[in-house]
Length: 182
Image (cartoon, rainbow, N blue to C red; front, side, top):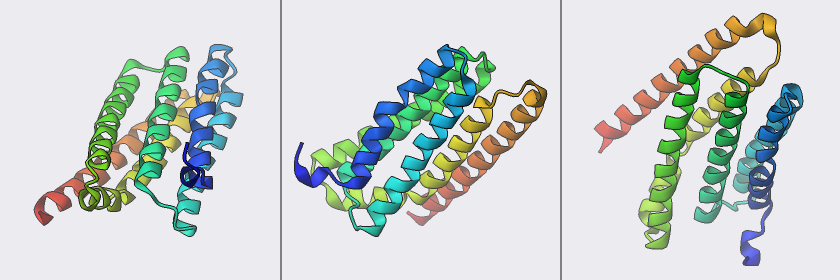
């Protein structure tokens, strides 16, 4: 790998890629609280990689694709952990759709990166604020679902529904704004 790619934000994304599958392993062992703790640490690397990329002016198309890929891998691993935990199927279907749409976005970014279409790629990257909000909400939702306290099962599903509703509204408003802007 080229040394220009070995910057702190990319290293943090790689760490996220490496450690996300351990969430599945811990869930398989029915160690949901350690899985939640690992998930929180992994989520912090997501926050930190974005922070350091902007602070050190190391935002690159490669780093954006790597970060998006690490996000999708993390979400996928938690989705499998939730399946192991017997979370209702409708939640898994929602995550499956999110992952599918995210993969389409990554493929689109890779296409523009390969074509060296920097103008279009930079335009796509400039609209990532909504993605940051959505990823935060998705991570909050996942963390809530990984909690292992039987007494709050109904509350977890209530709050997770509220989070999905907020994500849907934010995304719909953003997409409507972009549609009418063009």
